[in-house]
Amino acid sequence: MQEKPTTAVPYNGPHKRIKLDPSDKFIRGFTYVLVSLFSLCCVLPFWLIIASSFASETSIRRSGFTLWPSDFSTYAYGLLFRNPDQMIGAYLVTIGLTVAGTLIGLFIISMTGYALQCRDFPLRNGIMFYIYFTSLFSAGLVPFYLLIKQTLNLANTYWAILLPLLMNPWLIVLMKNFVKAIPHEITESGKIDGAGDFCIFWNLILPSMKPAIATIGLFIALGYWNEWYYSSLFLDTSVEYRPLQFHLYNVINKIASLKNSVAGSNVVIEELPSETLKMATAVVATGPIILLYPFVQKYFVAGLTVGSVKG
Image (cartoon, rainbow, N blue to C red):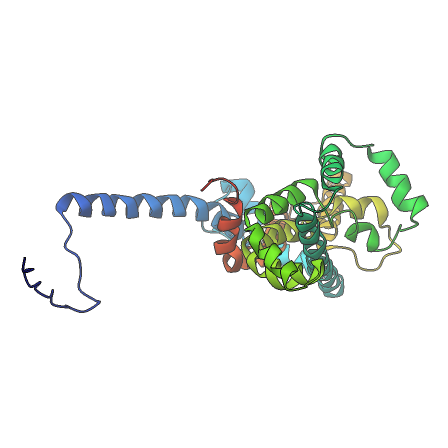
């Protein structure tokens, strides 16, 4: 039986537009409008914080928080940067702790997640139970304080802030689930070629862990960047430069104490920033970390969905 010749479909180029039905156009337009409104609702709070940080204290007391400052003022920022050496030092300390803690924490957590997924590691179930147990029960603040200050003698050092935030049980479980999704044949192929465990981890497993590394790295970086509690416990005035969040926390407390001390007297305190200072500290503290997020957003979304779909 003779086959019928097939006619070739003419190629119209890669830029030919697909014609949409009116219903498709309506759905697409409605989706664009809905996403735009949702994005605007997410941006407005940040804009409100920025606008309020540049408003005067009297205008906020008179009109409240507005999307555009009626009385433009940079007094709150001037108060924050009155001592620029302290602010720059606080930034450098926080950046150093964030970078060092994130890199070290990622290295340890990724190796832990890989080790807990190795089928020939006999202690993986016991160690996993110990990690999971520490996420449910804690000895409390007093033993932890004594451990850092007396046993390890890390008071008034940056190690007291760096070490407690290096590892987190939930991040280890997240990394373990991601490594579990990597085919075990990759590890077996490395062992057949005579590679050791660290060589397999560094050359074969680690390059496949970019989404998990970006996700967990962002969580660790946020923990170090927003850290102020351990600084209040283990760092005193003998430390010249303290982390940024703790420095801003002290500035706000000093202003609040000053306003409380002169309350009821004849001293005029209306111009002393309180609400605008809080907004300015929010801008100073969150600005750099917000700029970092778009660079890891693609991997962050992929890392959060690890293990959610079974194929």
